[in-house]
Each structure stands twice: as structure tokens, then as C-alpha cells.
Image 1: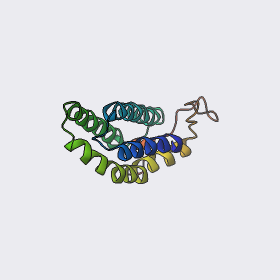
Image 2 (image 1 turned 135 degrees about the vertical axis):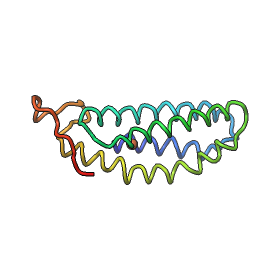
Image 3 (image 1 turned 120 degrees about the vertical axis):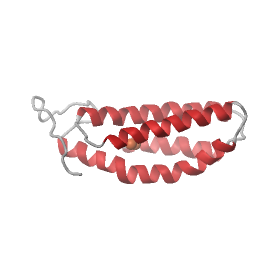
Image 4 (image 1 turned 30 degrees about the horizontal axis):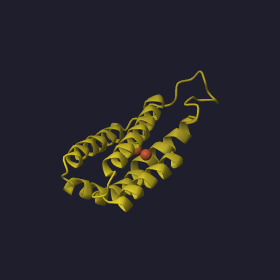
Length: 135
Ligand SMILES: [Fe+2]
Ligand SMILES: [Fe+2]
């Protein structure tokens, strides 16, 4: 998860450094969306595999991707206002998301013994993972 997050930060910083008016910004933005979709899908898979009970995490991923795709359409038409706004909002959103939702997921993954490399439970292959009951 940390490695994926480092990549997210790199994509994000590259977009901010380039600026929404720069040539090739749309292609760069597409690469960012592609990476973010893979990043979110990975976490969504892990949540499903480990019975992670907090649906709002998955929903937040969906909302952010929907916003990014909508902003992309505006950028494509040459309207850069929302692109600029998104670049301003992404860093504080991401910091908050990692500190809250992703940290809770990482804690849960450790607790269940889930191996994120193999996406299996190497120490307890036969038993289903315990569902987290804390709210
Ligand atoms: Fe994440
Ligand atoms: Fe997440």
C-alpha cells in the first residue's frame, strides 16, 4: 500500500508541477486516472477478501474516480478551471484519506494475516478471515 501511495504522490506532484495549462496535461491526467483506478481497485479487492466492513471507503474511492473522470471531460474541452481546483484539492484529500480510511484498512489487513503480495492468507489458508466488528 505504501508503494502505491508513493506512486500516487509522484503522479500528483507531476501534475501540479506541470500545471493544467501545460501541453500534454490531458495525457498526464489520463495516466493519473489509470493509476488511481488500479490503486483503488487493489484496495477494494483487499477489503472484499478480508471482509472489511466499512463500505464508505469503497464509496469514497468511487466518488473520487467519478469526479476525476468528470474533470477530465472539462479538461478535454479546454475548460481548465476544474482541473486547477482538483489539483488544489487532491493533496489535502489524499493526506486525510491515508490517515483515516487507508490506515484503518492497513490495520485490518495486518490483523487478518492477509498477504497483499499474494492476496492470500498464508498462515491460515482454510479458515475464512475474521470480520472486524469494531465501529
Ligand atoms: Fe490508498
Ligand atoms: Fe483508500
